[in-house]
Image 1 (cartoon, rainbow, N blue to C red):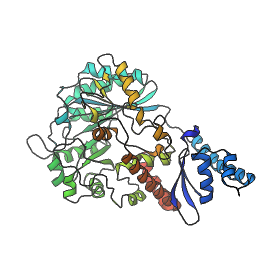
Image 2: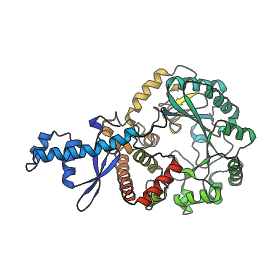
Image 3: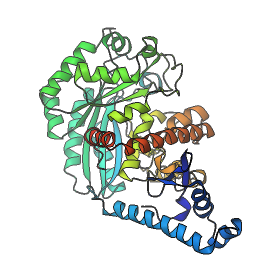
Image 4: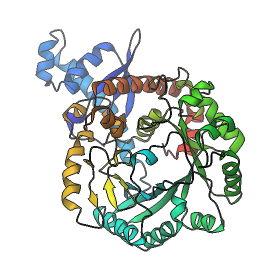
Length: 462
């Protein structure tokens, strides 16, 4: 719940004939009111006018009328506030995530992979480095839920260190550790299945759609396609009742075949039985695949998929999650604050996409040596992505629904900054999303379908 008045804003989402739909950011709610009421509340909330100043602005407004208007509005806000406070909190822990890059080695040769072009070969992470990672973050984040995600390269090429880290972290009493892995899905055996099940590891497999597309993008180093091997391993994992998410990288190859994101979602469900996953644009760091022709263009029917419980564009998830769960997103992205990337040699970076850029300008230290000074200095620089500390964000109505990629911004500007273009685009998208939420909620049947589907798929508890 937000108590600081300087963080509170209201904003018109939709103008109608006799009223306006207004988003109140400190209660994550949409309210209907008259245009005149909005004008007065705009002065009262957005511009911090005192009641006397408002009366001076509207000469025909009486003191009693203004008092009743503000009292009525505060009563509505109080009712919603009580609901927020009365919600059951299922997890007393705060959350942090560390991505552990066990190796930069990989058995594939994917056309858009930035790792092989940008990262120096560091070999495999040692068990001692893995131990130091757990010790450092266990101390740094006392009382947190710490999610460890293994990736690479291909993390299963360093299975022994993965196994060791899981066991060592689980024996730590200070924090609650959870485990996940992002894999290319080509390597599987009984030991791997046992590890995944023992530590309840959430597995994500990279899979780029139909065979004729996937095998162009994701092949072995000898040029052979990986589609059939991955599909077979997915079936084995599903037989073992292991939950799997997919991660699809959307490229110009998909565009060339006129494959939309919606068609890819349906394909993953139909052919592989996937329920959960994400489709992301190819990284700005890719060097072998042409950039998307219309990277920032949202498909015109994307918003219509919300009614089916499908958040088909990556930008939709966080504002949806925050609005319906009454959550207040503090960071544009948690990089360097509650999200970190660890390279095989133990170096700490805010994000895997920032590794090695500009002579390691954003390296926060190394767990095998003293990291405290660099770590804290860089965290101060990253405050620009903190909605409570960035002056521009602090006064923005959309801040509690806003998420973005600092690595993308850094690659475009070679500095940690938030561009005007990003802000303009994000606010427009959030307006469209909130407008859609409002109209769905007017239809009880559609609203129930949406919430039930998202409870199941995205683990929302609204």
